[in-house]
Length: 199
View 1 (tube, rainbow, N blue to C red):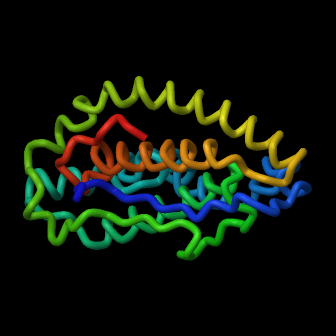
View 2: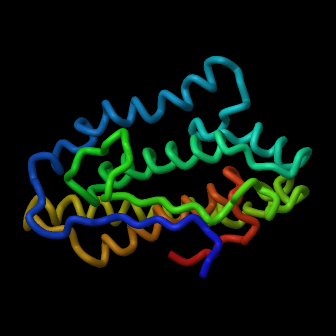
């Protein structure tokens, strides 16, 4: 069993809504603005406490390094925000027609590895995880471009046939799961297991 963040997305393959798919980038804006408000607030206030996409990174890093503890409030917040961002991405990338809820739902399930109080995590490794993940940043760019291509293919497929291709769905879910694994290792710091490069 992998000690990584697990991402499960219930993809709708058949009977897709062509109208909402056509206007998806416009329709997703309100909830995308809501989700991005967490990151905007951290940039405007000049606080590095929230950092990447509104996730609580620096306080978590400091608590792990100096106290050997993963704060439960940071873990709960990071889990909730990563789940929200994944729901927004699943909708934006056409994996589902259900508008993303700001609360947990059964369409997207994000499972963190067992963190407990953080005593099972390395105290020194959080200082260099961002550096060790550099090869993943390069791969992430490649996967992001591939994901854009897949989304365009899926968009045309939905418009003309009302179906989301299975091969696109598998790859897009894999790409979103890959990004979540990178976040979990390098930024959210919920695991010391180096993420795999596979989808």
